[in-house]
Amino acid sequence: MATSVIMPALEMTQESGRLVSWLKSEGETVSKGEPIMEVETDKVMIEIEAPASGILGGVLVKENDVVPVGQTIAWILAPGEKVPTSSPSDSQSGRASTVPARGESKSKTTEIPSSAIAFEASPLARNIADEHGIDLALVKSNGKRIEKADVLAYINAARQTAPQPFDRTQGKPASVSTNISSPTHLVPASPKARRFASERGIDISTIKGSGPNGAVLVADVPLEAVRVGPAGSLETPSTVWRVMAERMTASWTTVPHFYLIREVDAGRLIEWRTRILPAVEKQSGIKPTYTDLLVKLIGFALRGHPRVNASWANGGIQYNKDINIGLAVAVDDGLMVPVIRHADSLSVVEIAAQRKDLIGRAQNRKLRPADISDGTFTLSNLGMYNVDTFNAIVNTPQAAILAVGRIAERVVPVNGQPAIRSMMTVSLSCDHRVVDGARAAQFLDDLANLIEEPVGMLS
Image (cartoon, rainbow, N blue to C red; front, side, top):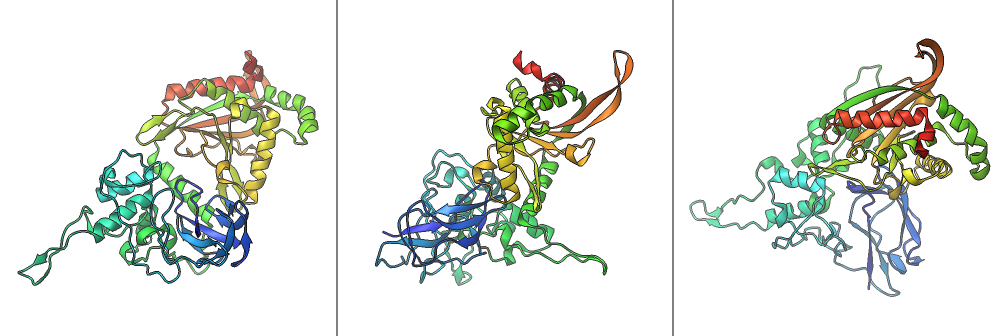
């Protein structure tokens, strides 16, 4: 039996992926688990393995095409087997693929069961349902929770299956209202696509969607040329940069930020690094950085402050059992945040090794989905660029991010006398929905004390 190869969902909010390359040619024999293609999202590029053994056939997508998640792009066939003429159902959600197999009409739609079930829904699914006035209890999904595409499929099916009674006075079918309330909501589209279209002054109904059941995705919204002066130029941002801009804008405009700033004496931090550097370098071949030491200290401090390690999710505070610290990493295309998991239980040697590996793969666009997911706190260090202090934007849905400046000698009072000390300024940005000022101040005080006296981790 033929097995479909689909565009996988590598991230929770992923709408589509770009097929970078086929690693196997059509007609070539493949084995289950063998890499057959490279796929790129806005954050990662990853090799996708064959879901079954057989012959690669019925390839529907060429390299560099942007493909909606869940779409069938090829088949794994048995010897002598023909390419199916009908689209398979997504094994997780039960949705039919939105791209027809060869010879199949695109007009086929998915039936949506009408029975209501207990459900859990993603934030995007809830937002779209709210926009359309849809009761999520009516949306069916065979997966663990209702996803955006499930809601879009429900909208499309509800519109097409609405009854059309005959109006005798007009001599034609009467118009019937559906659950979809306003004309602007008649076109299924992701919230980001709606926002992009609005910003560019484009009527969303004029855009041909490539998503599930014709839903308009971000990639479908054309880039309008911005008028610039004769001496100016316009650069189209990369996907990574565009997504970074979207998320930072969303965080800045929806998260009630507040900031706490603290100067700390980094003398003992310098001594600690100097003391362990030879041993760590001998053991792992990696020189520990101040970032490595700060990850260790932050992880330890977060143990006593679970609220700072929490997240804002579905209108409530979600406590996270693990302490996973994201590192803000600058790459040519923008900003990425790979995650060091269980940072509170790792040694400096382990943290340094993970940090080097993650940053190296981030710069080469080789991060895996697991490398950028489940972060609970973020560290952004610009000290190497001689920045004294700055305030960072919260990396939603996390509750806080620590911004770290350079270590510099300053004159400070010590026991009533002026003295020169190696000082560092740290700034804690918080989401006030999760953390209040007192809790944030207590965490920052504990962290500052650990920076000034790392031996406090032993007490």
